Image 1 (cartoon, rainbow, N blue to C red):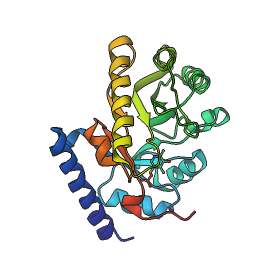
Image 2 (cartoon, rainbow, N blue to C red):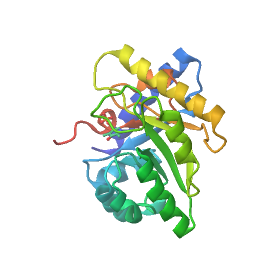
Image 3 (cartoon, rainbow, N blue to C red):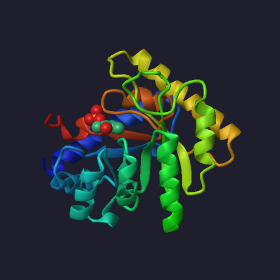
Image 4 (cartoon, rainbow, N blue to C red):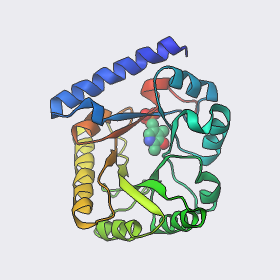
Length: 232
Ligand SMILES: *Cc1c(COP(=O)(O)O)cnc(C)c1O
């Protein structure tokens, strides 16, 4: 993909973001695109950065490592958006600016320990699963708020909001329901927990980002709509 092609795609995405913001009375400056480059080579990351993107998302530590090595740690803001295994916490912790996927208390404890020992707090979002889908990771169920509280109490973490993935469906009502429930949970957490910073809602992918924006998303994680289909 050339830089001109990328700029064109990004421009069309920006128009859709603007329209979703207009429909919901939001300011488009409050929505940030995280360009998800997983499955694409580092050259694609370079094209995206040249084309005006500042935020890059990867879902696997190995791939994040490779891209950061090729592109440079300071050349973008790096987001780790996929499940992080506890045994990869140490090697990943300096590679991202924001971790979207704190999906268990056990992972949160490990991250906090590591952050305390390095002396640098970790900025992160808690991944929640409000739809109760068994195939999706994340904090869910009736005790979600108390689990979020436990995670926020850990000294090494700065929790800046929630992340969610909607069920894979074409049904926009389902997307809206899940995103709205996530927003309400973030509002509850913000009201109940002094250390929870209700700053970000990471919601929305290529198939559902407009619904996510209408429900308050501040970070949309976009792969396919910017870079085309990935090889399976
Ligand atoms: C791959 C991925 C995305 C981007 O998905 P697209 O449908 O290609 O936009 C977003 N979030 C997470 C967690 C992902 O793994």
